[in-house]
Length: 162
Image 1 (cartoon, rainbow, N blue to C red):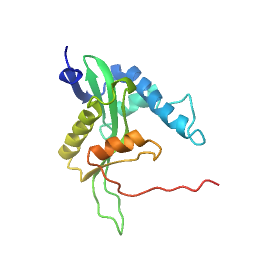
Image 2: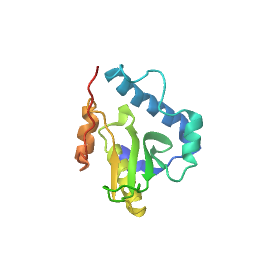
Image 3: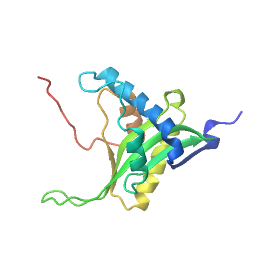
C-alpha cells in the first residue's frame, strides 16, 4: 500500500483546482460558523469562484495546494505584505497566511506540515522576514498545529461582547 505522502506534491493552485478549493473553503466556514454563529455567516464561503480566479492571477497572493494524484487535499492562501511606513515599526516584508486548510478526512497525515514547509520555502525565496497568520482562539486543533510548526504568538486580539 502506498503512503499518501509518497504521492503528495505541493504546487501552485490552478484554475482546475477551484471546485476542490471551494469545497475546502466550505469546511473552514463550518468550523467557524459552528463555533461563533454570532459573527460568522453560514452557507457562504470566504471567496467565490470569480474571486478565486482573480487571486490565481495575482502574483502577490499565491495559493498552494496539496495534490495527491490529482486530488486536492489542502490549500494555503498567502499574501505578500510589503513594509508599511511607520514611525515605530521596522519595515519588514511578511508572508501572511490568509487561510490554510487540510480536508478533514486527511488531517493528521502531515499534509498541513508539507503545505507549511512549501510556504516557508516560498517566503525565504521572496526574502520575507517572517510568516504570520491569524487563528481564532476557539480553534484549538489549529492552535496546536501551528505551535507544532514552531509558530509563536506575536500579539493578541481581544474582544468584549456587549
